[in-house]
Each structure stands twice: as structure tokens, then as C-alpha cells.
Image (tube, rainbow, N blue to C red; front, side, top):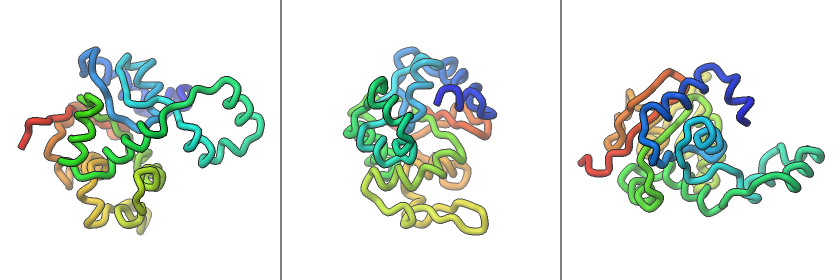
Length: 186
């Protein structure tokens, strides 16, 4: 994944800015597959940086026999409980999400566009929700539904329209957005 991220336009800059704009003790909420890059490139902590076995078996890559064997022997496994918590933090309304974030000492959030929209089905599914109740794809565009407009993830992605209340955007290069979590904001 790190090689893939290094070749994606705008991604390396996001990880570089994450380390410049956040304190060394920051805990960053991001989807698990960005976690390793955050740890290795940005030198910041994350909730989870590796897939759980449950997630690995639901991904198409686990069906590649050679890659599956290599991962089974040499791979690192993450906590499915933590990945479900991340999914919940993204799917819940802000005030409920903040309660979970506080349990994990989250101080910043990192999202990528359109990547998170393309992963939204999985994020919603892992959190126990039906993605199409929250996000629809019509006329070559993603649009949050009325229910989706309340989710933390979609509020951060569509921030210009949905104006998240408890997050202050500190960086946006069109590919990635970094937010500071504002627990005390009304």
C-alpha cells in the first residue's frame, strides 16, 4: 500500500503536512489502510494500521492464492474491534462520534477524496449500516442522503456544504483533508 500511496497525486504531500501541522503525540483518526503510512511517513499514531483477519477475508485480494499465503505467513493483523470503532466514528453523527473519539484520544482526522467515497460501502457495512441509506451515486456523482448528511465522514468530505461543527480544517489539497478535533466547540 505504501508504494501505491507514494504514486497517488497529492497523497505524499498530505502525509508530509500531517507531520508538519500536528504535534508528535497526535492520534489521527483515519481508515485503517492509511494507518501504516501515517505511522511511517507522518510519525503519528493511529487507532489501527492493519486489516483484521475478518476484513482480509472479505477483500478480493485474499482470493489471490500467492498473496493470501504471503499475508498469512508474514502479514500483521489488526484489531477488528478497533476497525469497527473507526467505522462507527465515521458513520455516527458528530456528537456521538466525538464520544468514541475521546475514548481513543483522537486529536486529528484524515480523509481522502474520492477514496473514502469509494470505500463508503465497506465503512458503512463494517459499522452495521446500509450504505445506500447514506450515500447515493447518480449522474456520475456521489451525493449524501438526508440521513448521510448527519454522518461525521460525509460531513468532513462535503465540508463546504455540510459545515462540520466539531472539526477545524487545517489542510486541504483537493486529495486529502486534515482536521483538528474540537471537543469543546458547541
